[in-house]
Length: 293
Ligand code: NAP
Image 1 (cartoon, rainbow, N blue to C red):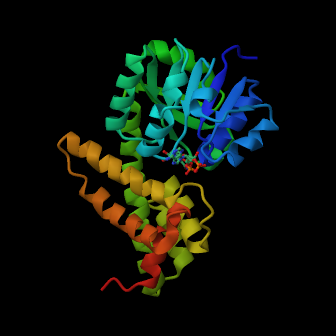
Image 2: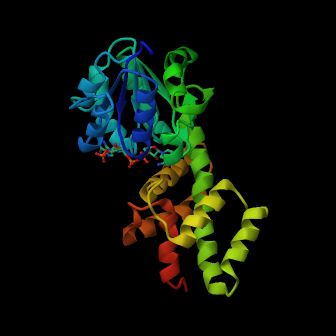
């Protein structure tokens, strides 16, 4: 059993799978979630359930967070009873959420003021990969901090890629999700068009999957869009957030992501029509029902 005790803040779609794998590896784990019910599930599996982030991180050598966005991360780390207030000297903070590089820079500064090290380590892979311990961690931060966190991250992942200093992980993740979001949005438009075109839908999708546009994302999302299976792997509202953060991060490098802005418009439209808490593949729905003329 690993000696290092671990805290995990945030038990949504991804955090729940991560917690299960940490417990499976025999790690001494404390969990915190804003809505306590999602944390209670893990008490039966041996986790300690904490009332506040500050309480959760007491004595933990590695503190992981897996939260929705910048606002959630700020609330969990910096509130009066937040994770930073309770973190023990020498512990390593690992922010696994997809957040902005601007927020990561601010959090790293706050951690440094307390003599703590921060890694940004967002993930690729979705609900199934989190549950199966098959995530890829995209890491920014020091070698030294990663050496401490690595054995913990290994229990949840198939690979750990160290990309550079703090902020590199989230920048890579936003670049990744920019390309995913744009492809998902264009696929939604393509399917809406295809369904009105008179073409045989299944034959057309089979050709696309096997042709140059084919990708794991196209294969997965086209099946969900055509079967209207919007059970959540990735909340639609989170893709809208990722495209926003990607646009802002690229703009800070002097690059305008026009395609991200257009894709985000479709996700925002779907969220406004009530699909925000469904899977991101539901982005196709408003396009099905409306004439775009
Ligand atoms: P999720 O299911 O929506 O979970 C979000 C978590 O954040 C929950 O624990 C939620 O608490 C908490 N939270 C939200 N707002 C909060 C606030 N203001 N204060 C405190 N806690 C707050 O999201 P997820 O799918 O697990 O994703 C987590 C992160 O990983 C996101 O940044 C996402 O972009 C990224 N990601 C997701 C996937 C995916 O396929 N799902 C893949 C890669 C990366 P409650 O339970 O109380 O609401």
